[in-house]
Length: 293
Image 1: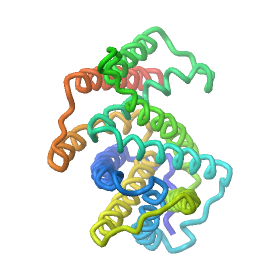
Image 2: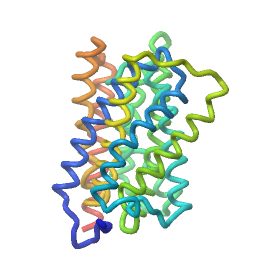
Image 3: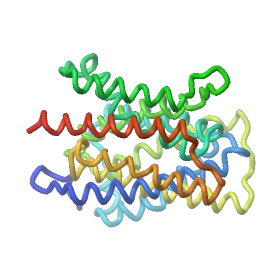
């Protein structure tokens, strides 16, 4: 049975590779979800996608030593992680209904800014003026994405931003339990929770998918399961401050897929806001790396 990664087996290169490949799979999954959101309830998409996600999970469990690899120890932490994952996923899928793929992806880059802004309150950490300046610049970038000009207000961008808040909490928990929990066990627990919450919405109305949409759901689930496994592995192999900057590359995948599949291109407001958010996020991570030396 494969054992959890220890400090002696940390691999920054492996973590970066996992985050890049996982980002491509997850962005492709988001494109598939956006294709489906016009005709199916969000809960139905979450549940059925989760069922198909267990296909790669079964393969990962087999390679990790069988069903014993699915065992988890920290039930409270796993439950909290699953709750944040489900909530952020529901909100994210709603955001895809109203936003182009690249616009929604741009909003996810606010994660490092949120962590820095909340650090003094939740973690008791000191944040210096340089990082506060970066937070303010990043916030200005978010305002550009929202377009706060009477006629151009785009409040739907707040949906993926709120989703990111849940994702930040999920990633913090993932990093804290990475040394004692297997990646496939964590993924299976969270996916099972998403399926359960999705099926709870069954009484509110479901739509029978067509054969074509069953195929898209299957592809989406397989991509999601593989992507989140790679994300968990990335946080097991390297510190978040090392791998998280490479999530910004997801914007490249989002712009390319959004244009090829939907004919969407981000406008100047989104691009300008994304630039400010990315620069501020990278600077925050740079300061964090200096602080830990």
